[in-house]
Length: 362
Image (cartoon, rainbow, N blue to C red; front, side):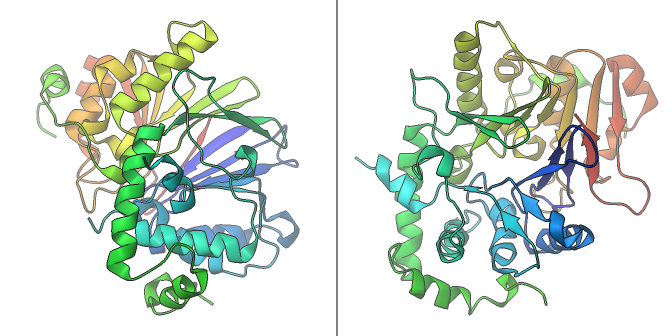
């Protein structure tokens, strides 16, 4: 069993992953926690579990964009009975600064998360000797295997992206009057931020859309995303956060060379940056073979997924594709169209009426 559930994370990401030989031996991994509203969804899901079955092998915070990290702040403070984090993977300032020579970036939340991880004593990047999670050019991609047989291979970020992150993080710390070494001051500031406290279709020309010019993503936080290849029981899922398309394309190129393959066979791809056209390219898609694509966004802030981003997947992502959306919204419902499905050979999957979030069996 290997399932990925895209929780209702508004415009952000939160992936609830379960794997194991059967329903009686389930292991869990959480990747990102969306915004504060998503934290409450995660909290309720955890409380539905038996108190003796609330362990997560891993909590990955891919990068410091608010729509990925904000919900982690109250979640890491919440004293849910029985909740246990086996390890956290997160590149904090202490990791970014090793590579030194807008408000939507969540470096402040990143500092809060760092202080909370330290305070709770959760193993932090333990699989990497507590160092940064990076893929070094020319070296083998780092990986770790978790209890139950889940293997995660790190494809990004690279040191150059971490250097840029460190500079931006320093700017945010200076603006906020914080010191990365003064955890008490950071936690005191966190206590003043109330919302971060825990709770007690017309005709569509797919080819034209896919081939239209688009700016590449240059957002600093997105460039530092931890993207992972999850492998379990012969199944593979590429979990991408908001990674830049050229960075992921290069990582996949190198991984394919390392493994002696022309393209990486995947069962599932969680599409980068919620389906933004800026993070999806033909060159990236040429590096993989995949039938199932996951789009995580309600489009509330930035209108994701972009029509052109979805069109690129349909046009260059292969044949007989399956597209999964964790919300039905004005930004994705145009793809729920029989004429388009027949013409372009794909299927769509949405939550049921009145439901948000979608669980996918890998």
